[in-house]
Image (cartoon, rainbow, N blue to C red; front, side, top):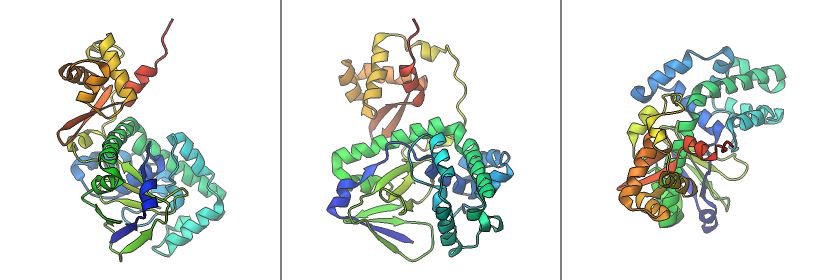
Length: 336
């Protein structure tokens, strides 16, 4: 299936990259990935670990999301916020929306037997929402820091595309394997075998959302309240990083050699500069701090080994951004 999104000049002006991950969009991608069989080397250990932990409520929720095809829109709202905030918003979904979304799905493929009375059964809906919360805790919770860091790193690359080549370069480079910019149309090739479809944005613009768990194709959500959303896999420039993202982070010791080396004015200035200018190159970092590029590279290496920054290579350029741990360290209150 080819999904064609038609842009006007106004749509190009309103197209943007999301500032933060969308927890339930990412969860929807993780649920599909859990049910699929793609990339066994990368994902099978995670699948086995996750499936062994699922409760009856979590399996019930999982049955509403096929590995390929359409799932109820109310399960994957586009709201930004912390996972806790968006899960609470999910529980407030109006009954009429649940009914409408399930009716739409039933026209495409059979619903699980238990879901037929979902819209009218408050207790059953609470079980479903409990299952979604448990799925988030098992599928995303242990890796949320890594997911956020990868999202931020990909967004850094996209913003550079936007600054250097405008929205058209942003659209052309976001996911060349599955998305093709053929002005004024963005063509998205999907794995769903249906007829082609055309979406005319009509001035709404588009929101681009990088995703860690969306591992192939791209996902289009047209029911979003603000503007349509295209979710695409995070950059593939460093595939080895994706092999380790599903390993829960070890608990950091309070005093390690790497962190101890952070003591000192210059390295603290480097970390602060990266927090204020995420995604800057080594040369830009050196100019911000007033040190040589070689010194900036050395300090960045130490910070990276301590887990306080992440470096992404984009073509021949190193782009540095702080990790969640680095930001937390900067925000730690001083003791008197």
